[in-house]
Amino acid sequence: MNDILAGLVEAGRLVVTLDPDLIEITLRSLQVTVTATVIAAAIGLPFGAWLAVNRFRHRRATIAVMNALMGLPPVVVGLIVYILLSRSGPFGVFGLLFTPAAMIIAQVIIITPLIASISHQAIRDLWAEYHDLLISLNTTKRQRIHALLWDGRRALLTAALAGFGRAIGEVGAIMIVGGNIDHATRVLTTAIALETGKGNFALALALGFVLIALAILVNFLIHGLSRTESESRW
Image (cartoon, rainbow, N blue to C red):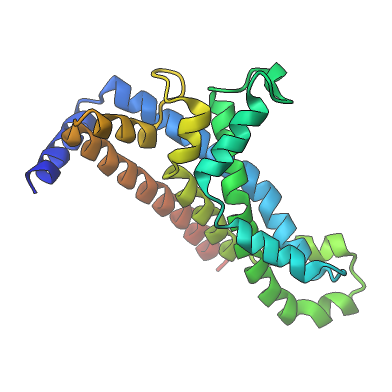
């Protein structure tokens, strides 16, 4: 209990004093996670909608694989990305290992199946509702997907936020591919792991509280913008 109270006090001190290291780590966490979420959403949302609208031979198997990939072990993803980006790997020439770009790649791989699966569920329900209308209008598949994505944007926002929530708390994969290098690839989760290993529980808890507050703040901001958009329609 004393460690938790000490963590709260330390978190307050870091925030009030605008600790430079905290600001740097927090901004890097946001940079990596938001970028990964945007890329994953750009891939996962249309793919989920495409799966809902199209019928093809191995569709059920594809959906099953996509759902299974939601449980990808992050450390395994980190290991695979590490091998691919290492000097002996096929993409080692780009020098991406131990950079924020490598962390973004790992997070995109982890959260894309999650976003795609949730969006597929949401679009599938919409497709069942609008199927006859869109077919009667003689729309193309691209037009159907675009219409369903736009009409279901608020539900799809939840899918993106779910991806963001998983990415912001990820530590295993980004520790492997990022290396937790100070002033380079250190983010809130890896900093928490480092301080916990050093026995500095007060600072680790403080960083944890900041991480939780950051995740909540981003979710409130997104939901606030979504509600504003919804109210403006009336």
